Length: 372
Image: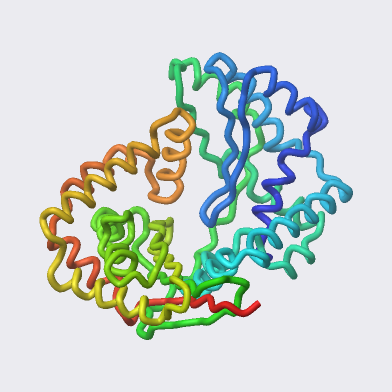
């Protein structure tokens, strides 16, 4: 049933017997905390940014709601309506959301990565309180959690605080089903959506390696060479030279099992997205054949490195990244190795991964055509 993890993220803020919703919020506000949560294909995370001296408060509240959440039909039904409206806003009434969902379905036809974390509307409507309770009892346990603490705290004191609130919680054996791997894609796939857009849009995607693979380093360099900035090859060609597109963007997303690299292009009025797709594929083939120039390689590696340091610039973002590396790459220490991995990338590495992962045969594309 798609959408249950995201819906449950909402329910986690509804309070417990010891700390009802309004008390939970009041205690964190009085402590000067910021709190929120997010759900993606590999994880759900909850966070508090708060003064270091308030670590005990965070552990007290989080450990309590890990096992004592109050779940009622009234709360469940109310939050399910919130999530349904969120889907309408982010997918059904958003051309980008609709295209992203279609593209993930094409890239991952059998794997759960191809199903929306928001859930399909029919699945959200079919979710019940019993589903939520079963999900909670199955997955919300210290045995299935990673706790990250970053800030001006002493490690021994922090560990004692964590143990004080989590050690006594019941251990639950968490299922870890073997998920189906995707078959090797041998033929390009395309889909066309008629959408309320002024100009044509194009989204392209390729499955790539898992986050633990050393290929993530040259692949992110490839992404920067092609789509990352206004100095990238595809941006310069489509926006500046040919003047057929107004925007070129994308995403680089290594995951626990496989991952994906995306290109996102908005065409100028009257321009054909199919021609832009051919430019992207030809540019990829050039990169796979000849590799980047020395200047391109240096610039792309510098951009990846700068992006990395921006992603860990604050205490909160550092904690987020440590948790993400632990859950997707299997080891938080990989975060500290990333820059060295990028710096070691050479021209031949770029040529190899471009020719291995980003071929015509492995291409998935969604066209958004103006029409409604």
